[in-house]
Image (cartoon, rainbow, N blue to C red; front, side, top):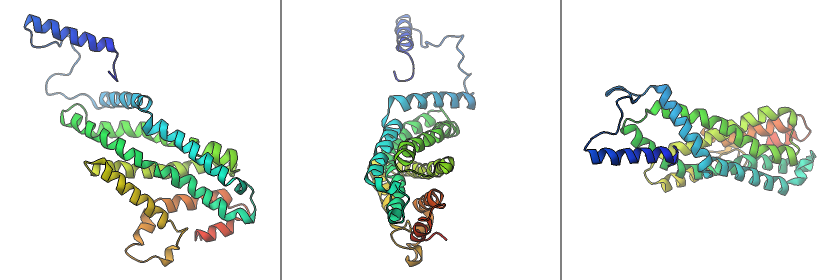
Length: 271
């Protein structure tokens, strides 16, 4: 079993067999700590159980969190090596440095497509538990948030630590602020993945919709075409998708104190 020791499972199964032979209908002891019929499990207990289970799943199913953290680390290191000349804060590297920041955010955001599939399976499982009265939606959301937000910070450290500050020579004075910006941005993409995961019964439809949002975020990010040149109603994506805001903030806080700042900020149309 994934969540309890095998000895506990064997004890329950043995008790079932013994009671079946005796003709008894229940294996629950009269001294059991289970709540009386009609009384729900306290919210704090539900949250405790959900947190314990999800914490175990993080380690036992590494694809969703640990696997993505490794991908963020390796992919951003790869881009830092490709743009290794951009570590020099020179005017001729201004555009390259800006695009390096875009890749640092854009590629990890794209990995949310994996989360859509995993969250769809998780949602189907939790929905059955809620219908069976095993937990409440509030307990699930609280437990998931308590575990998920620290993991977003862990993602940021993996994505930015070695690549941005080890190879790309980013401004260390704004390290904490930069991590906060990146964390908020990746959490926005994570939230979109969760919404799309429960919007479709077939997770493949949610994954395709996520990819459409990701490509739209690049198209309407303000660095390929200025926002002033976009037309309504398509221009709404320029305002609602998160990539524009995260890239502008990261570029501004990394290079604002250097001579190349005005050039890059003008490309992003930051005033």
